[in-house]
Image 1: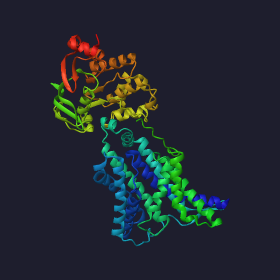
Image 2: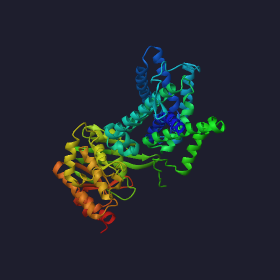
Image 3: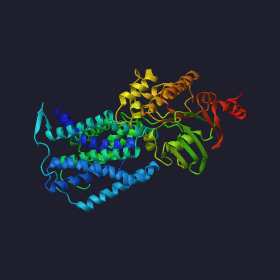
Image 4: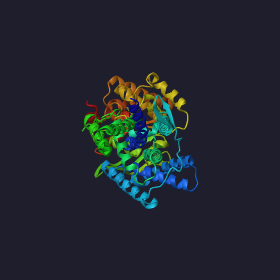
Length: 299
Length: 234
């Protein structure tokens, strides 16, 4: 039982990273109806920016904050320059564009920072010690990562539900034409969505590096798949769903691996297929996910 | 001086030209109706003014040329458009819909709201209700209320009577008339219900296949033989 609780706690920690990236995917999906395949590579790219900043003497948390800001600006710029020309085109065009961005950003990370692994962060950003809770060891780092994730969700909630700009963001996603008639600049709202997603993705990248150093240009590839599974499980449109989905996928994968220590089937190698199985099952059984709505289109 | 003036406006959807040299004007504090059958180009005329459809020709609002402007700029200049199908945000609350109406106003939500509530007292109790769950008539009222939140100089109304019970339609036009009289709001209204539209407006235009076929004071049009036959049915 203690073992089970221990693994659930560990799963929640990795799950909160999947949840963060899933949140980024959901924000862009809500405003554009497109799944951004480049979200993971964008996170890697920005994490390398943080590494560069630290190399130049910036403190870890300072670099963290700067990177999130840079990611925000980069996300806005990317939407304005690269995505905008195809914005009104078919969804498939935009999807292919994000796959192109995936390849391009991945290539750029490898080209600029070379494909060698680096130690980053320089020191553990959170204390390495653990709390003992009835025999279950809870690492302070896991709690820290989970805490930042939940804080992020709270901030987003406040932004979307209690500010004018948040209202405009929601309106632009729900009904672009009517939004323009009341004066909302829908194009900029889409750019803002990309900026927010890139900033949130940067947090996911930074925590991925912190949770499993060293820093590696391909580190977000599997995480992106887990985040997709999380987003689909949560219903693709729901930020809260993305968090629940992320934590669920994290715990699920962790329990599978733990179970494997008894049966030795090397299920660890099946982590990605298991994530795909989650995606497939949700899409077949409950396409709206846990909290999403199934879009009914009149033809 | 004309508040709004269209001069030889063409508009097209892709290859299909819908408007052919439409010219019309709305004076300050005037209610003008646009009549015509299905596909005559009534809705497109409003969409051309708001910048929702590509057009060529001259459109002036006050002393500004607005032809080819983006909808958000047209809204900023003081034109509020209640589109066909109302364009309310069904997933959002009534209050959020009204907030969006006042989106371009930096402050003064309370003041605008106070004023709008005078015309639609029922909005107060329904603030938290999801707009999509309102009845059709209430949704049309909400769309009108939202447009007023922006404190526009000109209101564009697209088929406000569509699908509504006669009693609701009368109430709607009564409020529009009151807004015009009390606050001098200029209105350009597109309507299928010609009788009501002519009664509520001072001048009217009849569109046929994208061209202005007849124009004149509403009273005269109501007496006009061909208008009566084609649109009034008597």
